[in-house]
Amino acid sequence: MSVLLRLVLISASWVAIQIGSGYATHLLPLRLFLADGPLTRTRGWERGGRTYERVLRVRRWKDLLPEAGGMFAGGFAKRSLDTRSAGRVDRFIAETRRAEITHWVPVVLSLTFFAWNPPNVAVWMPIVGFLGNAPFIVVQRYLRPRLRALRGRIDSR
Image 1: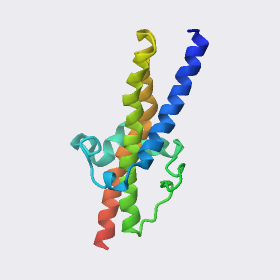
Image 2 (image 1 turned 90 degrees about the vertical axis):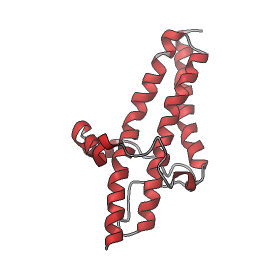
Image 3 (image 1 turned 135 degrees about the horizontal axis):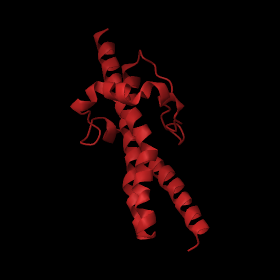
Image 4 (image 1 turned 135 degrees about the vertical axis):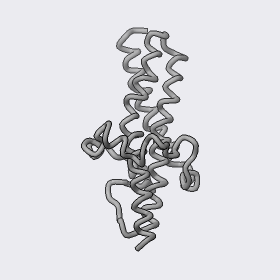
């Protein structure tokens, strides 16, 4: 296979994996994202998102990332938040879980590149998958504890 053809196929595969994972998780029922699972639960070392703020300066760049939550019919656009609505905050929290899973799926699917690429090419795909999706995962993990705190303030009003 020529280098150009391989490059085109790899690029097209990444586009299909990214869009496909977004669409697949969009189709899953919201109830699956109402509580943290083993992957999405906040870890102690994250210190309620403060680790991402201090080490990665997430507040400076998070708004530069594209947001595609509303890309599919019935999706949830996360750019604006009604801070007075407990239901809206709860939905936003659930959608951060959905978005995090959406961005972990391509990392896992990157292993499929080993099925049709030489090892010296395929070995790079999980790295590319992780590096391309890590900023989005970080933002979700940063936002979720902050949204939980906001939800607590709404309850105390």
